[in-house]
Every structure is written in structure tokens, then in C-alpha cells.
Length: 135
Image (cartoon, rainbow, N blue to C red; front, side, top):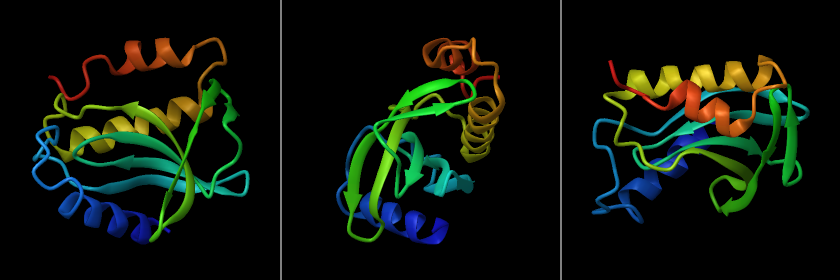
């Protein structure tokens, strides 16, 4: 599934996203930390224009994790099929390089799957990742 997802979004980068100014050219498309979770594939998709928590093919709109409930949106790409996504970062300008984005994605997964339930999604993202990619 990882290869199929990466190939689909590389194609999107080369076609639909070609020439879009929002992209961080220091980043590439990478499926990070994917694993089976409740019968779905769960992981983070890093692209030069977003970082999304992904569920393939996806559960309902609201999904409860150890750190709390997240709301997912539905999408469809012919090369991937149906999936659910929850935006983690809508702009990727703050990431210095691919390694910084990858490490952030892995930390997000770690926190989502093992964090205390008292941390809200908003506090989690703003507190833990407000300075992503900065040294």
C-alpha cells in the first residue's frame, strides 16, 4: 500500500500540483510509519504541500485514538481508492528538510497512539509541533 500511495501522490505533484507556489521544494512524497490499525492502514503522508494522518481505506468520520478523537475527511484517488485523512500540517514551509518532516511524522504517530487522553488534538499540534523543523 505504501508504494501505491507514494506513486499516486508523486503523480499528483507532477501534474495537478505542478507550478503551485505552496510547495516546499526541500521535501518529497513519503508514506511514513504505516501499520495495520483496526483493520485499516494508518500512517502519515508527507508531501511538499501537506502532512496528513491517513487511514486506508478508512473508518468513519470520527476516530478515537489513545490521545483523543480526531475528525477525518473522505477522499478518493483512482490509483489509491477510498481513504480518510486528517490534516496535521497544511503548509510545509517550516520544515528544513525531509528528515525533519519524517521525524515529525513519526512523533505524531507515537503521540496519537500512545499519548495520555488528556491532551487535546489542538494542544498536541500547537504545543508539540509549533516549531516544526526549526533548530
